Amino acid sequence: MNTADPSAAPTRPGLHGPCLAVALAVMLGGTLYPPLFAGADGHADHRFAMALFWAMSAGFVRGVGFVPRPRWARMLFSPAAVLVALGLAAALKLG
Image 1 (spheres, rainbow, N blue to C red):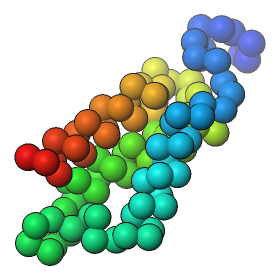
Image 2 (image 1 turned 45 degrees about the vertical axis):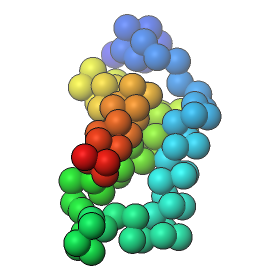
Image 3 (image 1 turned 90 degrees about the vertical axis):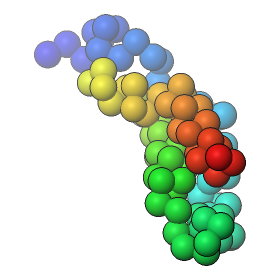
């Protein structure tokens, strides 16, 4: 197996500041203010939490410089996925 194959991971590895910043913000926000994950009725909003945790996970994976080899994993943990997850979380919270 050729590990230097550029087609294995088209995105260059390395720190990705914006993704890491989003991941840290979600982590600190949820830690310091847990009611963030509650709905209007005071119960846990699991769909909203799932979207934010997806954004946090993708942000940490890509933010620290890891680029998965499988295409599906690169898509799931990409900077675009962070934006999609944040948009989904915003739509769930506001709508």
